[in-house]
Image 1 (cartoon, one colour):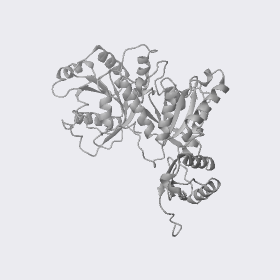
Image 2 (cartoon, rainbow, N blue to C red):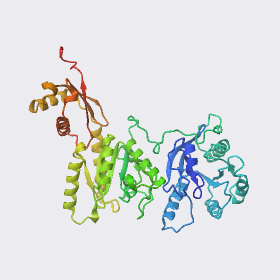
Image 3 (tube, one colour):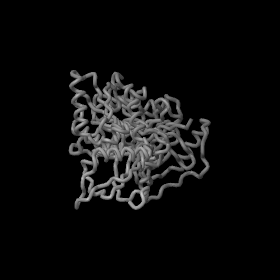
Image 4 (cartoon, one colour):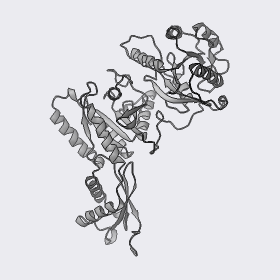
Length: 474
């Protein structure tokens, strides 16, 4: 099992900046506003040859257990329970605060290994705070700058010593990481990433994102599926900010389950932090393979829900609609009829999208969700033989021939093949591909979906001008 490290400290000392530095990607949202991180985030950290599992946590605050801050602290405590080493950060420029002293005493009572890091110590800015940090009783403080990449050699040595004391298997074969170039402020990849997601089709891991409007119950659903309080939940809308990916297994399928921030209408998003969270959620959808659109069943498929669904299908992702809080709906027959009618009229590009009714809070109906996800995932990956496609195309054009093209020429659809899966993408070769009306293309798409059992999956049909390679002189 990998050596595990938790980064902790009061708000706004640079925990997420250090997390991003050690995982080498901008996974965690970073802003000058304190309290950006709420849920614990996990990533694969590395310094030179040392590799470890890393947790970013919410800022520690002395708060009532029932408050949002108290719930955030429980997440931090869970991360510490799972960790082999704690990295406690203080702000070297601000010096020691009463909150730092309070939680240092709390860490000493836990009797676990701790490395004390004085962050923001670029140049001589943190010298005073570094000297004060000795008073916390957590050993020698290490001066670092997470933003500038300074102090990583000392951090490497401290982690290596902790791994050796723990008896952990280590992979330190290279020299400790050099300090970052002073001109390279972040030293990270320019491309944002969502909790280690990639677009690799061959790793066998299903990337499953939960999207929806604020307060639809996304984090409650994630916790219900995982069987633990992994995400912070509560009556307050907008609790989730980062797109948090969690490794999970359902039956024999490895899954990356991604909880996301609630998406509101773009015109209503004013604050920078909410915009960052919304961008994070959209990237999660773009990297996902299946998206669960979670609705509040009391107000299903509002304009923003449809916007999320359309964006999902435009990106070529498979879609499952889940109506949450179904136990609070009084007239369920009317609500289901309204929901299905709206789907049929507003999402014609993926007719037959599976609809699940459930209550994430009570768990009723949640057991239907993953079978629906598995079914649509398999359809999304389906490959159809060229012979079957061309027999089908012949039947479709015989029963309803294409119309005449420009200048009175007959449009002929000569040959069809499947170019790729994920989503299913087909190419039809025609003598006049630009003349085929959209209505006839929809006729083909609907027939393809019905004949080959592809409901709820975005289909792409591309028209190309090319002769049939199997017919001479055509």
